[in-house]
Image (cartoon, rainbow, N blue to C red; front, side):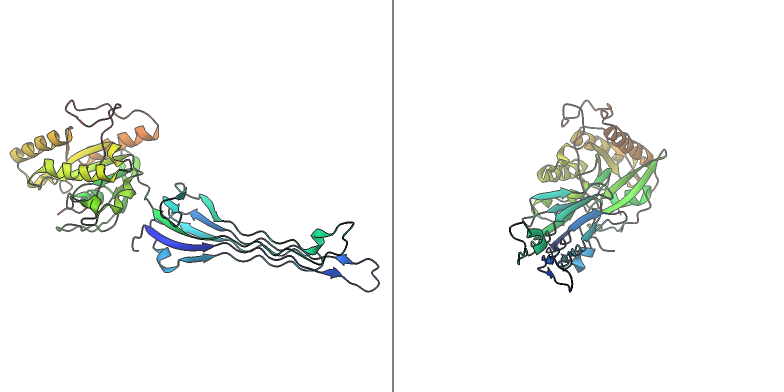
Length: 362
């Protein structure tokens, strides 16, 4: 299934049914009179989050959604049936925006959540509704009210507990494949990952969701490379794991490049807790590894984790570090107090800054 995280759709709720003008006329019935029934309500347009979806690809093939018109009223005081509703099934994490793509209507973050985005028109009154002591034979009825029509944007932000970020080929997809059952594409060229991937990681019988997004490069916030369009998928995460490849000639510069793109994007990513790790360490000898680890520590202000998805070194430690922050955030508890004295960019509570991206490792 292809990944699509934004779609534009046209919706229209149903018109209300018209009221009926009718008079009772039966042989041997002394008293007749108006008996026109009311029209039925037009159908509503709803949006509902469902399990099992992580893309908006269905809305590429259908962009128009119209609810049914209410049935008109009939004689003998018969009220018309209400029109059928229309429900748009969307993944958890979908946001609904007005046509300007900026005005937020609703943010759907819970499975089974429903929201009415267009209300059907009310049915019109039949002439029986207007009968009074002084007007016993009204010969008019109301038409039904028109439904609402609008164009809206659907925008998906995946729900994940932790996000993987870094330059292309930093080892994010390899990390995801090693700790979850996800099978992202992995190759030794940049931008192997073209869309976000999700996986469920387990450590010490505790599960959490990891999100891997395409890699960031310098100028991504200006549209360079794939740009920063996928950063929204890690806005909801509680912690970021920033991977820096040990194959980078200047690991400090690699870290600062991604850090700058996150700060330029905003969206709260600049303030998220961040765990920094030097990945692909199996390609270095001990002396070179120590040199690059020290360089990265100086750039990020914290002691980086040392990881190798090939040998498995440091992988469990990384998962436990992510888990600790996630559990603390879920319980509204303070974040772990393990801090580096050299950390420069921390807030008053000691929270680490965040980073974002996703790409494949050689």
